[in-house]
Image (cartoon, one colour):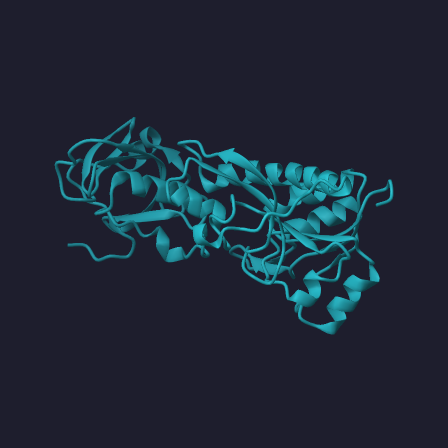
Length: 321
């Protein structure tokens, strides 16, 4: 490797990938090409919006391509033209074929948001929170044709706090991934990066998040529902029907004890929060949001929309009894 560093093709799409791209651009390495998914319509107006990685590449003055298809000779030829030493992938959002993975002379590495082989798949950060984990981490891995099955190059743990949501954990994970990537490149240049095969017998999966997962089942334990609310914040969010409104629930805290009421029943509603009976224990919801309204602390929410003990939350869209 020359003193100027490796020639790198960077492939990524969402906010998670941006810190790694910026750190690479500031390092001794040279980002010769950025690859991101095509712009998609977003928001209520369905306006065509650039991906976060595209915006970052423009700020950094980096060459960018956004192929509609990656399994084409044209895209492979474009990568070969850059003569990359290495490709770095961070939440690109597509499975790469072997032809693309093998183009760089040193192969392709990936920044994955879990401690592999745990949580292979598209939503490792959200699934770790939903499943009640207290630690997760970043893995730098050598890519192969499988779904996050390649050799482990470097790992670092990240703590999950009791109030962490996907929205608060993602930025920390992204920064950790960027730092660990540069550390891995330094070790690679020094000949001290040793690939370690994954133990497939310990593998778990992290399938994509589905919108319908935000429908709460009040028969579940309060601790599980609290993790669900945190894991699905900021998308797709957990909503429950109260009277004729679908209320969004935030900032949960499980409370041990006998619910003393049918699951979904409001036991108490005051400035501390709305306390809801669950299958096991109770769930204190400290922030809520009405349709079209703002996310509010419980005290402010209840001033505009009173909730009384004995009222019952139901799953989103379920009929009233």
